Amino acid sequence: MPLNSPISTLIVLMPLILLGIFSFFIFRRKKTERAEQNEPLAEDNAEPLYDEPPLTEIRATVLRMRCEVNSYGTKTPHCHEEYFVTFLDEYDKELTYAVDKDTYLTLSEGQKGTVAIVNDRFYGFAED
Image 1 (cartoon, rainbow, N blue to C red):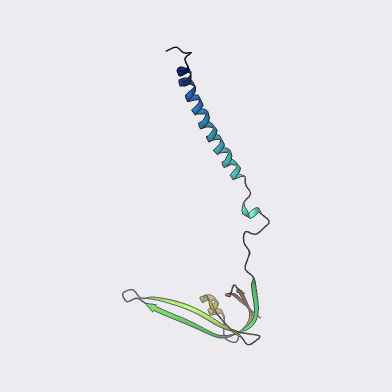
Image 2: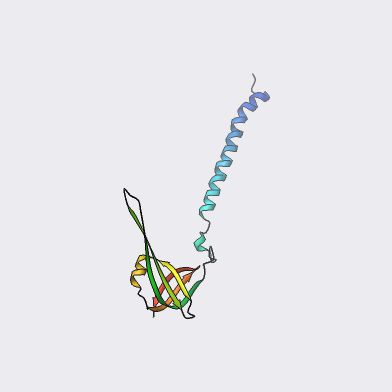
């Protein structure tokens, strides 16, 4: 088979064409990866990623405190404790919230201060 034939030319050029296509996609992928690495992070943006829920502060007095204990299991008994504090606001409305154990232990009935609430959940208490 002579070297000038179209088939021999195709046999020689086909691997070169495939190598060119393969190289194009490899370099294109590397360029895209480099561009993604140089993108600014969300922290660098001036706008917040999400809206923060509003914090509501209410002047109140600790009215009642209670602890609920649930035990379950026979072979290996378990205990689950939940702590609740009821506040009386300045409009004589009772507000009851679940609190963590540390907060429960630092509060006492009759204590006056400001209750912080986010999305109808207890956030904190600051004594006057």
